[in-house]
Each structure stands twice: as structure tokens, then as C-alpha cells.
Amino acid sequence: MDNNVVIKKRFIISKSMLGKGLIIQFTNKKGDSFEYNHDEVFAANQERLLSMPCFNQYGNYTNTNKIPNWAK
Image (cartoon, rainbow, N blue to C red; front, side, top):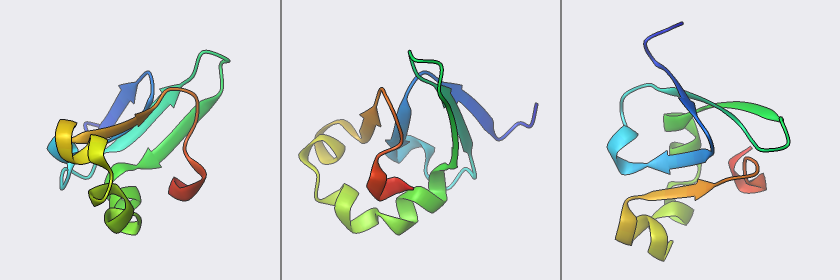
């Protein structure tokens, strides 16, 4: 496995992961698997994320079930 691939249990965009070139892989409870480039998703949605109270307060945005439509 590549050093830049991270296995998670949910979709996540996190301030602490920015700039590390990470590929996130996750499988939800239904068994659906997803993979995305963390930095590319953040870059494409930076304005949206920075306006979210959860992102500013906790430093991340998560979704347990899927990749949000805006992040695809």
C-alpha cells in the first residue's frame, strides 16, 4: 500500500490532512467503497468548507455514508 493512502471509516476533509497529498479510501456500513484525493476535494470546495461552522470549529467535515454530491 502506498504511504499516501489512508483508510478511514467515513468521508473526511480535515485541516490537519491538508497539503499531504493523501488519497482517502473508505467503506460505509452498506459496504460501498469510495476513494478520493483529499487535497483536490478541498481545493475544489474550499469556499464552501471554510464557510461551514463545523469545519471552523472542529477543523474537519465528515460524512459517514457517502461522498457528498458537492465533493464528487
